[in-house]
Amino acid sequence: MLKVERFMNHKPPAVRRGILAAGHWVVDLVKRIDHWPEPTTLARIEQQQTANGGFAFNLLSDLAALDSSCPLFGAGLIGDDANGRFIRERCRQLKIDDTLLRATAEAPTSFTDVMTETGSGRRTFFYCPGTNERLVENHLRPLAPTAKVFCLGYLGYLPLLDAVDDNRLNGSARLLKDAQAAGMLTVADLVSARNPDLLAQVTPCLPHLDILFLNEWEAGQLLKTEISAPFNTGKARELALAVRQLGVRGTVVLHFPEGVAVSVSGNECLMQGSVRLPNQEIQGTVGAGDALAAGVLLARHHGMSWPEALTLGVCAAAACLKSSTASDGMLPWKQCLDLGRQYGFNKLSADK
Image (cartoon, rainbow, N blue to C red; front, side):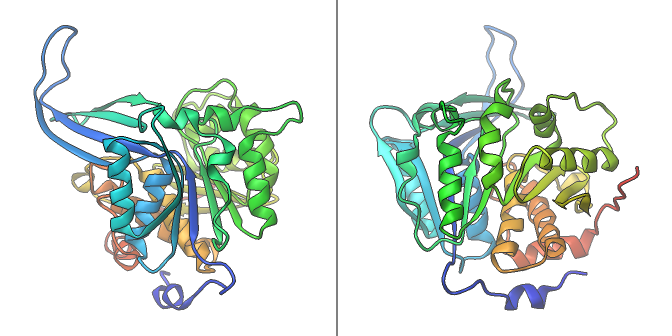
């Protein structure tokens, strides 16, 4: 049951309010091409668009659309260039506090050329790491003093923050530990990129995490196991429990196309099916994981139960699927819940 009235009436404690997202800031340069060319041949760009990308930028853009009354804070490193100015302007439009968003002239703002082939919808990504590879712990300090939630991503894809020192800690772990000590809810996300050192880089962070978001492929990378087809909800539950047993202090949220498996405590695992959005309504999958995280975090920020948070999460992900960019499909939270009412949810069980 979608308890709209309860969601609307819940407010977080007055002492802390708002969500701080730190880490990846990327500008997506989305281009639609008539076909994927053979080497040395030409393809025509039919349409192009500049959009938000990366965990922090996507999450905050989604949250601004979901609930404009929630205070939002951004932290990271961008370049002193046109893409950096695009990010600043977008923050201004969405009322995201960018005080902790640093700028440098020593590297370009991170960007991705996203090539989408007309007809097939196949997408190919060309990523320029830029400033994200120069992000260090001090760029993110001091933490926003009034925020209730601190989110960091993507773990394992921020090399200077990920580097483990002689004390088996890294910058990400220290930031999460300090945020937790200050009374914030701590959150991290992973990204679908191959990294043989992922487990070593993420392990120092796990005791300081209240919520870890990841998908089934990322879970396989973390657990150093192959995810074989067909993938089912029983396997999703096993993966969520196994990731939590690596040492996650709080909750593991594992999302996959059919829904979400959430390891809360012990052997307890919650399941929530995704929205049964018709195929003809789906324009793209970029940013769907970040959208799900935004829905879940907004609900938890407002003191909602995990089942209610997961419902809003999958509804936010469904809204994201209705656009080819990471956040342009996002709707206010009430309209996201309407998608669940309209199309219903996949039915999941842990044994099939």
